[in-house]
Structure formats: C-alpha cells, structure tokens
Image 1 (cartoon, rainbow, N blue to C red):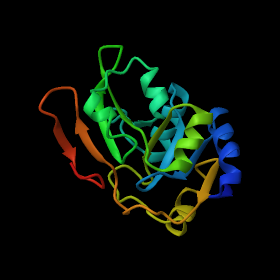
Image 2 (spheres, rainbow, N blue to C red):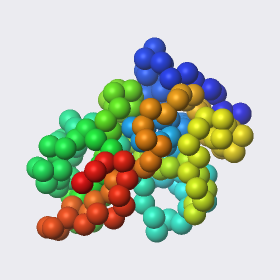
Image 3 (cartoon, rainbow, N blue to C red):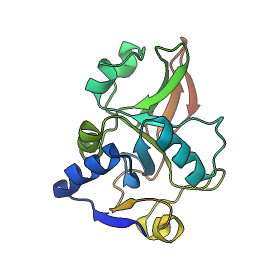
Image 4 (cartoon, helix red, strand yellow):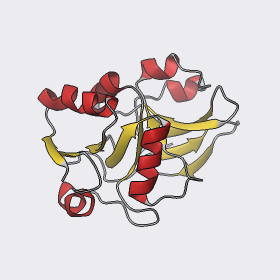
Length: 181
C-alpha cells in the first residue's frame, strides 16, 4: 500500500527526500499527475515495469533551471528563456544522444526537485492507455505499485506538456499540449 501524502508546503522536504532515497511516487506536476522517480537507471527500470512501457520510449526528466544550466545538456537560449513552463524540449546531451527535459512551472514540484535532484516523470497510466487525471482514479490502480502518492487537486489544464524537438532548427512540435507555441 502506498503512503498517502497531502499536497502541502510542509511535505515538500519529505517528498524530495523520499525521491532522493530511491522511492517512486505519483506527484502532481505542472500539467497532470506524474509517475516519478530519481533520474537514474534503477528508477527507470522500476518505472518501465510499473507502466508496462517498452524501453524504447524514454522518460521526461524534470529539472530546475539551475540543474539544467549545470548539466551537459545543450539547451537553446530561446527554450531556456521560456522555462519554467509546461514545455518539454528534446535537446542534445553530452553523450551524443538526446534527452527530453522540462523545468516545471509549478513551485511545489520545483521545490521538490531542488531537494531530490532531477527526476523522471511520465503520465500515470499503463503504456498505451489514457492518463489517469485525478487522485480518485489513480489510487485504486497504482496503490500497490508505488511507494507514495501525493493527494492534490490538479490546477493545470488536465493536459500533458507540449513537446518540441529542439535538436534542429526549425524546431518541430511533436505534441501540442498545455503550452502554446
């Protein structure tokens, strides 16, 4: 059974520490709820298993702007200037590949990430199914799969982030979401 944590500023440190320690949780992000875990190999493996997702599909990494700036990611200035926002950008990384990253617009999740470090995030659903958008829908499906669930009312539009491929100019919109390009 997942621990239920209330969406309050008093719980930010606990959520951040739990992610940092390797737990996987479901957290309201700036768009919809996200299935989240520390951005490392072990958590990625667990997230793939929980979502029943093919490993050919990577996860979005949520970061603070400071974390992006101190990373080896190659982020165009015009993308960087739009963050924080519900805008996910696919950018070149220091290993010669690409990464999908976002600096969330929600202060709560950014404060969590300041403690936990970068985290993977994906919509709360099984691969190929519709995203679950409310705590009431999420709890019975994922209660035994994750370590904790943060209970909140989603303030966003109930729509996933907009995704752009910023590896080449002109950029290509891969998914129009809650951020208008």
